[in-house]
Length: 193
Image (cartoon, rainbow, N blue to C red; front, side, top):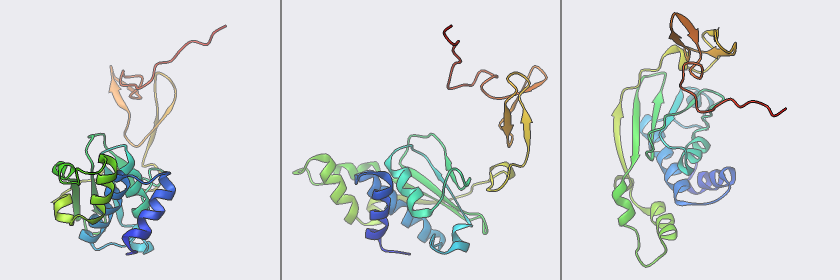
């Protein structure tokens, strides 16, 4: 695997700025990949990897940058737990490891510096065991969540929009999308006439 500094530089370029979250995400990805003995620069290894990120902040961009996993390739999965954590899954072996940033590291940084600067510096040099909790886990990935073409597609009986890979629900005997079932993040508005 390439050196930390090179991976951080690439991640910062993709993300747009250097921050403590970038450092944590790069180091988190390196640790997860090392635990599974995978190198994302090796095409065969990269194809074996699926990563679940648990936060939609800077660290998630760093994990994606280092691993090469992407939402559009269905190799990066986002689960909204609000935690600085990621789970790395080797789909060829079934092995998985979850890497969680320790909250207590925030208080271990140099108090003489502004918090942002102190975290940025400290997270680059702290030993992995001080920075992360690493745990083997099991992740059962349904066929509908694997990379590749959709396994199935249905049309919502309410709005007529297509729904891929089991994301539909049954409501009053009809197959509908989650939005039409009442689980929507948006509301339709009427056009002004």
